[in-house]
Image (cartoon, rainbow, N blue to C red; front, side, top):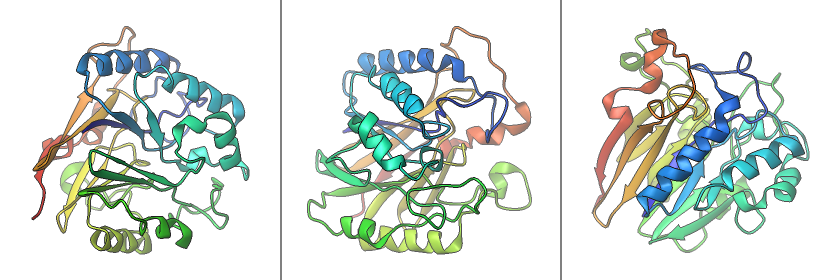
Length: 286
């Protein structure tokens, strides 16, 4: 089984404002998605794409329809873990299911599927007092609801499990950032709960986003991975390849293939990560 993981496309946003780690080039998203479609066609064996969230900058029918149209150009399904920017109205879930149901399974934004005996659980994390709704003025404290965790107990466990949610999963270590403190550390309650879930359900890989940074951390035989923003230079995504004995990750950049001039902030090269944040090979535990 092979799949692509990308995140943080922020359709409808601005190149000059909003959270970003490297310069955004949102006007060129159609070209970037076109390059991805060509690349997937050339591979001939990509099963699906997972979007780690923040597809749009804000939840409007127009933004959602534009995003749905862009990803419909890919030659394989795209599945979405809704991010905080995808939840900026109280009716966000209904809006997504009305205008882009193809991103989900069973008309639910929390869902799972099994491919080649690999189970993928996609769960929308919540950020404030009201579930499935994010106010930018509120502190960002990601959490899951009990009903979402019940989904993890359902059958079809598979030989390996992947958990996908939008929240960043670990802080960026000092040896990567060059700073004397951890960057983008999630709340301790969320981190502890996530670690407990991975052990209880024998999860091998946890995929997140939100921080716009390539990061790979291994804890208790679980890989925790986040990725840089696909709309930011150098336009990167992850390729995951699962076999019977192991799985691998590679980070792929489109910066050498775009037909436009782009900017890059060389003061923040840590965003692209160390070698270990960009690729690895992990053998399954017996």
